[in-house]
Image 1: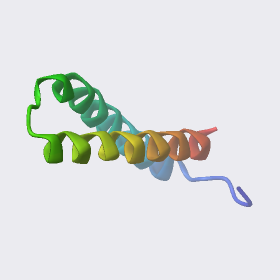
Image 2: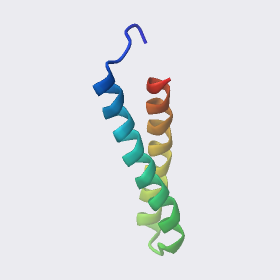
Image 3: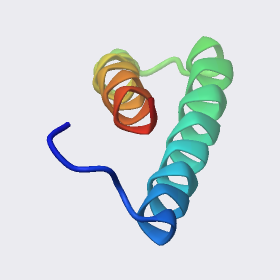
Image 4: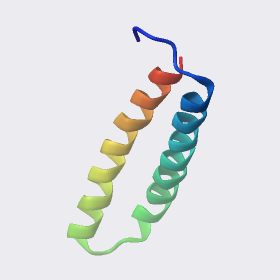
Length: 62
């Protein structure tokens, strides 16, 4: 990044990262119990998107 983030900005990004990680963990655990194929596909796509978002957030904090 061109500029360094302020402390409050880093804390906000960390808070979003924590929430996103928690949601992805829950989705990963629950996908095994889903029987509807359309819903399962949506959850799996959300897991892919969440993984990308988590990596992006981690890169912001580094």
